[in-house]
Length: 292
Image (tube, rainbow, N blue to C red; front, side, top):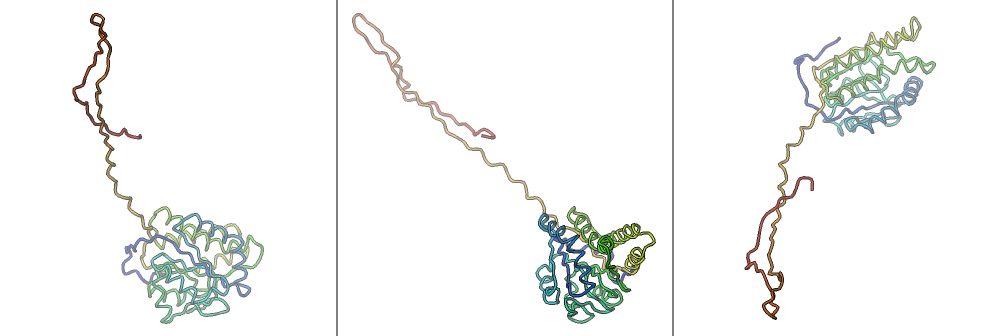
């Protein structure tokens, strides 16, 4: 593992609320067609559903003419306080990568240096960017950087072969979100190890075939640059306990009215008999019962 920024390997970054997964999909010539077709077939709907179901996962798909510098930087600025994953496919050279119709996306220059610190994980499926571009991004603030120091291969063939080349790259990010969503602390090495294990899983499926051979090249030359940043989800503290609401009190007054209780007979005279309360009332209080 290459490690170019280990000044504080125990540095825990500020906790974040979301993972913002930017998929660069320029889809303009053969290699990007192959990658894009596999993405549409196997992962686009899965990731879109995840973005609908979880408020801590955001998917941004920059497709064709949107896979350019201006659109990418606009998303970086929109989500600059979150953990942004720079993902997808783009043609690369040792010191740059390009987007739609070969327009420049990143290079070892001042413009890229200014936005490098907004990227949480740079993980492009691009040739050669591990030679100069990945170290450059790491030196200028990108938290985790993974790139190939040699050409990266994507075999165009039956669907199951193409899927094997895409699977370690896409499902490692799904794993990253699962860990983040669960509240786990995640180090760059955890993510990198998961990605390599997924490569091993796919290589084992293909035995001694050319598919296994080229997958193994991708795995062998996929290198990590680690700033020591530890990804952790921002957990909102529970609200403080609320004091119980005071019970309602009701004043009850019972007033005894004078009342005719009967009659008495004295001789031939019928005399009404009354009992009086003499104005004395009976007063009291009552509380509202729980659950009423």
